[in-house]
Image (cartoon, rainbow, N blue to C red):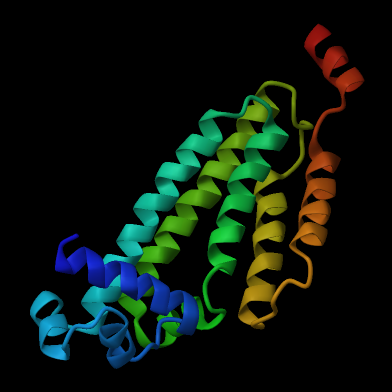
Length: 192
């Protein structure tokens, strides 16, 4: 493994453990390199964080495409993508995203743009479902999605660790089922 990739992988471990504001000394000792070696690969910590974020986003995009491509029904596709990202974000120290916002605004904007893309992907799944009579007509899908994302962001911003991810998933599933067309309703809509 080349030195840059080794540092990025170690950086991911540090970010998961400490958030965006981790000591470079800890990263260097983790992989037995000097600070001089670190700074010969990355000019600044910001540059490393940017590389970490792009590395994570590439991984998340790839997995998200796989999750979406394997699903045929709205509920499963939506839940798989939403839960995958929930799992990924909760693997990091709760200060990761807030630390990025406070100390590394450029890097924060990169990850925020990615999550905007995820919201768009989720919204498109719901809109496609509505077009195919799988999601109730006349339901404001943007508000539905905003509510679910706002709830997660509220928990994240309060550094609230979900007591039970399973409970949140049940709540999300119930919310989603409220906007889905039931089997009988779907057959009726397809007749019209």
